[in-house]
Length: 247
Ligand SMILES: [Zn+2]
Image 1 (spheres, protein in one colour):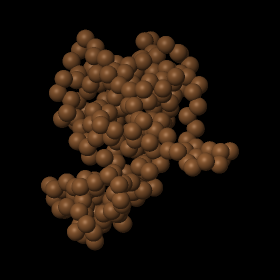
Image 2: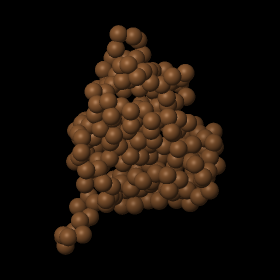
Image 3: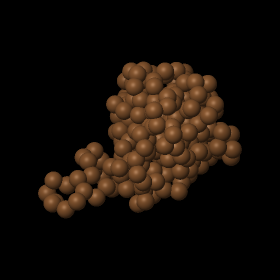
Image 4: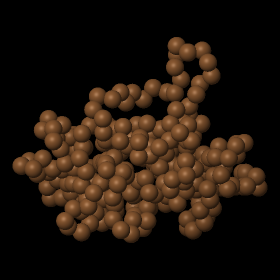
């Protein structure tokens, strides 16, 4: 679900779903994707952050199309979401990352929503919000480095973050040092991100997976630290759960 949209075709006036007014009901809003001419409208629900934008006529590959974006606010417990802990959990090998919904078939009590857990759930939440918006008190743009949020990173990209990246050209890996080189954000290409490995098998698997999907966008969760060169950051990758891709 999309938590913001634009009031005008030029995308100058942004409206967060939670700030939309009753009078906005029935008005046409515009998709955050400037290439997409979907007719968006506000769905007002009781509750502070329950309202959202729905749309008709999205481009097939528009991220704000409900089929490409799994974020449903009511399915997750926002107040228990701790971004750093959630990313740290992704680095733990062998931790189950099944995407089963928040209900447990064996219990008969009411369904209790759980916090966001997989990288895809966290990414979809970030992309559904404007980067200046917050989720459980944390600014969304501080969780995800993207072309929209890049302006918020005035002193580099350090600490736990998701990055929206592409492989670095002409060569995106270094066999000798077991490194994968990515570039982010996708359009601005401002930073190089070096993925480091201690597990040779994991390095090979991720390198081959990136090559097989080389024209796609890669989302990586890492605890980034700066290197000796300006605008270059690195993080260790210890589990596949730290990466996903979008087409
Ligand atoms: Zn759209």
